[in-house]
Image (cartoon, rainbow, N blue to C red; front, side, top):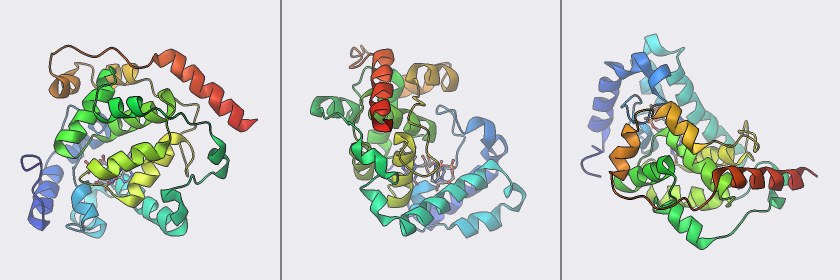
Length: 243
Ligand SMILES: Cc1cc2nc3c(=O)[nH]c(=O)nc-3n(C[C@H](O)[C@H](O)[C@H](O)COP(=O)(O)OP(=O)(O)OC[C@H]3O[C@@H](n4cnc5c(N)ncnc54)[C@H](O)[C@@H]3O)c2cc1C
């Protein structure tokens, strides 16, 4: 943790300076590549008020109409949602999801938390989270989809683990992120859109650099779930909800 972060206003200002001095130019293309330092890493500093969205807006006038500022907008949106729908920290925004047939399986949850699912991109992300308190956004979406769709476990299991382990744990953004992944929130990814962690890895970590960084070259556990079959089961469960 000490290697990864420099808490406080000075640390936040230094990160913003580094980001605006280079990575911001390629943010739109690089923000999805977890092996590359292509995002600002300002999330913990924003959460703890060590830098504010207004400071960022004023420090980056030439980037106001870019994807980077849009992402800051997502954070604002998350806070508006939490204010107007405080129940969403524990309940789905879309009430029909109260009836969703979630699975319960303590061993699968533990495998996911400890990065031992046998699915390389998922395990790499969960280990990055454990070691640094942060996980790349693309990988957060993949590990979340895997938990709520392939393992069909309640999104609150994931939200609670992130809450305990993220250095940027934020009630508003975490709730938004998990309800988005589960398909039960505002502007959510539809439930039938199931991320395939293998094709996500091919697309966003084509050289396997990120996965090697967190997994090393040692032996890997066998997958705890068949990606194709579990996808079908998730879609079938979703159909029962609709009927
Ligand atoms: C399941 C899940 C859970 C998440 N939980 C959290 C959380 O607890 N705390 C948190 O700060 N972010 C959360 N996010 C959003 C996002 O992953 C992080 O904000 C981002 O990875 C932080 O890295 P960065 O500062 O380099 O982001 P950058 O790409 O540099 O973006 C700049 C800032 O915009 C904001 N931002 C970016 N993406 C999002 C987003 N999707 N939603 C809300 N704000 C965003 C953050 O404040 C971020 O620091 C979650 C996403 C998912 C899919």
